[in-house]
Amino acid sequence: MLRLATVLITLSISGEALADIYKYVDSSGRTYYTNIKSENTPYKRIMVTKSYYYARPAPAMAGYRSYLGDQNKRKFSDLINEAAYRHQVDPKLVHAVIQTESAYNAGAVSSAGAVGLMQLMPDTARRYGVDDRRNPDQNIDGGTHYLRDLIQMFSPNLELAVAAYNAGENAVIKHNYSIPPYPETRNYVRQVLAAYNRLSL
Image (cartoon, rainbow, N blue to C red; front, side, top):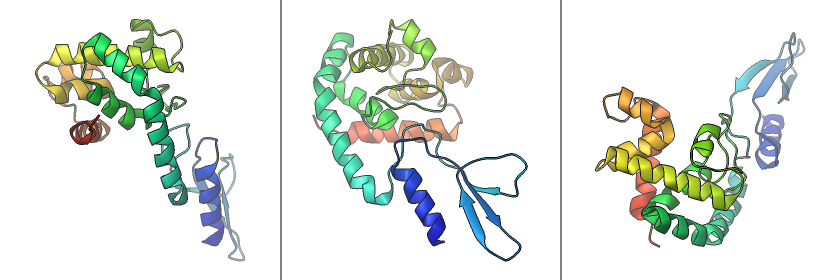
């Protein structure tokens, strides 16, 4: 178990993507672990990690990540307030979405290809004139504009607007204007609205 713990800590604090963990027990009972997938080997996958390219913190790093999140929240606060004012969206809601989407990590990239603070997909970025999804100013503006359109589309139901930000407006419409029955989306709505209700700016 000590070797496994060492592998997990190394993966958690690295700047690279987290990897799945594979295990092999040889004929003498020795156990081996690796994060490298290889065909035609006796290693069996025993752990599947989160599908994000940016690293999740090990427990010892959680406080440091929270500190960085607070620093970035202050760093991007003016951009968020400006975009919220420009598109007439409550800045608390923009903060809640960013906190849930990326924890204020401008370099966040998901396995689905969403990028930046507001995790914009390529089609959404093009739709709102975002040339560089990694640019915080463009990312926040495009994401806030999209959020405003969703709020107007599903008014007065804020839950549906938030669900559509995660799953897409077509998914909400397809499910008869209700939160789609996807565990990820339902959990996302709870997280965003909880953050929105507790935020004080």
